[in-house]
Length: 501
Image 1 (tube, rainbow, N blue to C red):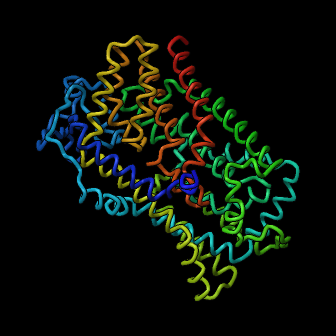
Image 2 (cartoon, rainbow, N blue to C red):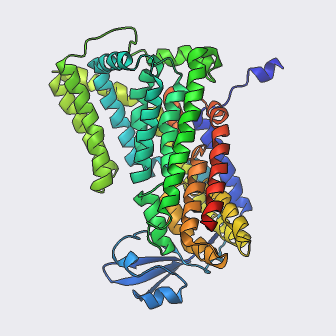
Image 3 (tube, rainbow, N blue to C red):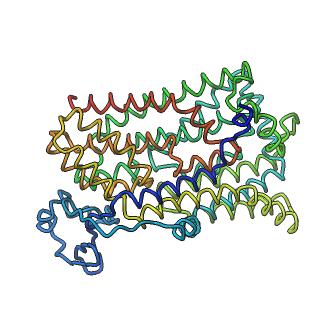
């Protein structure tokens, strides 16, 4: 018995390596296969069909789309709304198996790190910026001020953070960018006498429910609707109701847990790590009452401005990781000059901050490596084909709920929301027609299913988020699984109701 009590849940890095090994085994069991892909060549103004070792050009016309059984308006391709290749219905072809062996297993995380270099660089630069602000004592002064303002009303912190993150998720897919918020907000939540899980929950759950019930998110709602051949506003009312109901449930769930922890810290799921977590964030002394003077206010304003510029750039200007990273690097330099930090101290603090998030950066790369194994093993399309065959001919109530659950399962193999949309929607949307269901409901099933698994998806960013506070995935799963069940049932009820209303 003592032997088992000494066994600890493995680190996030080990969990991902175990998942990678599992995927390698799957590539030996699941046959390889692929649907043909259709893309639009804007230079030649032709459609390009990519099949096994073949490249076929077809006229860029509605007649070509109709002939291929793709019920998507031509302008969706010519306008650039659908820039990624989409699956062509009824073209699944079994391929020679591509089992992934030991060499592939070793190379996968390295390839994953190379492929995710942009987000890794963003994380490291954010770490440097946060440490520069830490060195100015601006965070300590700001937290002290906020603590006085929220005394007795700390729950408002949960409401505010979860709601704002959810709004970012539902509008422009705020997800990877949330990594930046943890080092800043965790000390604030600790000052409110909550545990670190409450902070992780407010940020990550907010992102999950926001992206699950995306309303105008171009990376899920709009691209999935385009791939289904419908306007993105179709089904919008139902998704807005799902967003409101889901957000309320998530906030109530978080507040109930947070209040239990505040009354009795021993009821925290991570109580055994309380001292270690507080020590990790000891660079912010919560017992001091540092005066928030004009210079420190300016530092915090510049820091907050970096995030405002990032949100505006991503949502309005089409920015991606290079532009976001540039903003945070510029912010660090400006703050360093403002507080007259000497060159040696600036470099030392910046490198130390980046070093603190190096483990998180590796987790992001290893998680991408799991996707590399799936792609190289060519098993994702086989699973999609099996899912479409399974749902074909079902009664509509059963069809939409099984599709919802299948989408949730497929998210493990296709963690990208836009990738899932363009690969699956041209296949699943016509099946909705045969079941007598509006295609907008299938778009909602895709969103709810993808978003539901995101709460626990180890190949997403949850492990990277937990690594910041050194909390194990087992503790997170114990914390989140009741909420996943509640949101899962809510999704089923909403989809079933959408059939009749």
